[in-house]
Length: 208
Image 1: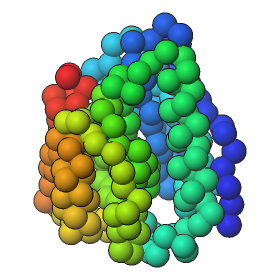
Image 2: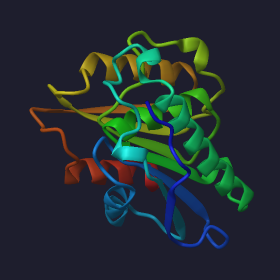
Image 3: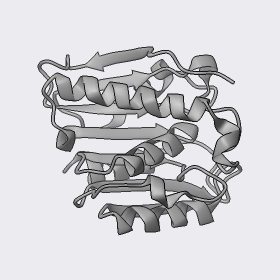
Image 4: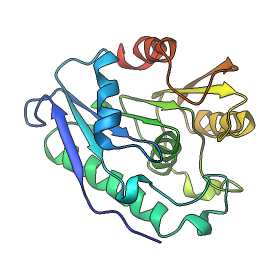
């Protein structure tokens, strides 16, 4: 098992001058640089891009549907790294309601898990194929009020890693915490990010 170093790549507008920030979380086997390349398709103006890099290119060792204990201590360490990145953004003078999150696959699961454990009014979040983490969801971990934060979850059906039932279960929990959740299901779509999903993210989240 492993813990994550605070290896965070920043690009876009420097934090000190940025009007907002986007935290980007790569998938299993991916890299921070890899997920950053996605930002070019988003409607972002004067935005800092913050992308942590997972140790060994993986945030936690097993499926997100395994018991949480199986993915420790890597999972807690990953959440800690995100918390560190968010704190650095806030210290730079960017408020939470100007902080956005996005991730793909394992990074999408981590995105949803982090914001659910730390709910407040954020700029928005986009999960490209993901759901909340655990064999059973420990709703006692999820605290706060999203205060109408827009959250978009895109997924394929079927998806080899993320069951649609877990996406839907996650959406119900996030809605109960005050998030403005949209779930978009693409029948037969492979485990990837498509242009229509990026356009939907721009419309529902980044254009706000």
